[in-house]
Amino acid sequence: MTKRGLLIVVSGFAGCGKGTLMKRLIEEYEEYALSVSMTTRLPRPGEVHGREYFFVSREKFEQEIETDGLIEYATYVENYYGTPKAYVEEQRSAGKNVVLEIEVQGALKVKERFPDAVLVFVLPPNAEELYKRLKNRGTETEDVIRKRMRRAAEEVDVIEKYDYILINDEVEEGVRKLHSLIEAARSMPGRNEELIEAIRDGLSRL
Ligand code: 5GP
Image (cartoon, rainbow, N blue to C red; front, side, top):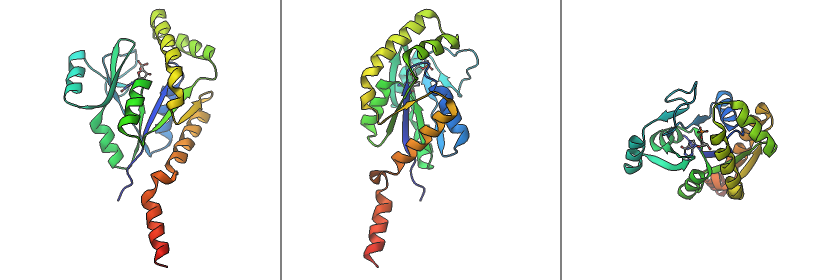
């Protein structure tokens, strides 16, 4: 029987580099699948429907909420964001570790609904770096950047509810760190009850 994959939630301030980190993680290790969220935000240049997000209208999003098609959803700087349920289920059943890259409200909802989920918070080396990265991205207006920075200041308060923090300085190093902490989480006794039981069983028969 295939071992069911873990649910991994990665959050971090806008501009902390978590998007790049996720992309590299998926490219480098085949045991991960990245969930594609649904949002009412408009695509940024270069973003593709079905790859970065499923870009939908508010009506469509609200319909998904009503029909329980989402694992969780939240509003972030005036838009809805949510995780479609079907893909996550399908991939976990196939043994993949599914990564959700979502903000903190949604992350805490996932933890409530799936206590076994592993929550990782990605931090930039320092606050100045965050502002610099957001500015350099050049895709948001100054007003939106300010709102996102304000939101970051609020999100700091819930970091302690996460299982791990990851300082994202250099991408390749960040990917290795992320993979090894997921491995560590997978190796906890509570996530290996079947294996422990089988060994116990084997020993009792010797
Ligand atoms: P962005 O607009 O920069 O792509 O994303 C804004 C924020 O929404 C980020 O913190 C991102 O992690 C979060 N986000 C993306 N998808 C989801 C989702 O499905 N659910 C929730 N709760 N947050 C999401």
